[in-house]
Image 1 (cartoon, rainbow, N blue to C red):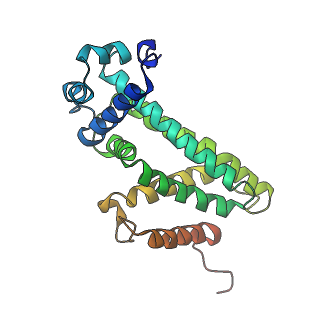
Image 2: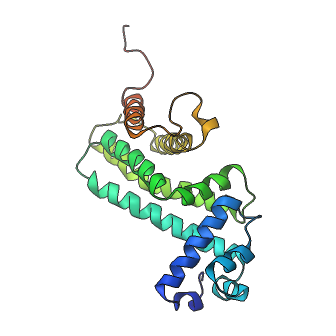
Image 3: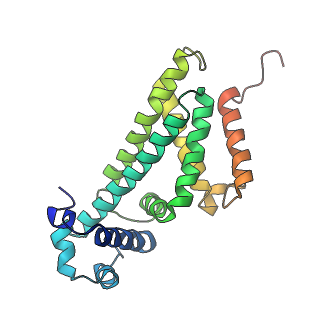
Length: 217
């Protein structure tokens, strides 16, 4: 179990300092270059304490990852509650905007996720990223199924492919808002809120109406 009981017994202020310092270190240095020496110096504890709390650096990172997942779960639970009475397309719109707000609120956590995807050889990388996308699928699937049941989506829709499609598009949308080379000229990278809103509306329009011309045109 990570963290160990020795960590759980700490005062909340000290636990928070360890958490915030580790997030900083992994966000700016990645995993391989992250330094336990730098961390313990900032926190003001002995290096051996990290091993007592988490076993090793991999255990510390797993703790940070689990913390990040819980933050995302909390964010999505909130948007799910707020959009419960809305149609499928408004719920997707709300989910994307919740992702944008999450990045604004937790930029270092999202930076770790980007490093896992693009830059770093993190321990258990494949397992962690698979967990992220499985969680996304678990969130999206009931929305898609409900959209079909309410006749907001096609009755012959392949739910598995629809979930895969939405997960991929939403993930890339959020990445492009933070990474310049993923923007591809669409105007998402570091865009102001009004432009993000406009692009989200275009995203929803594309999902709602597709790309094919209307029959007879």
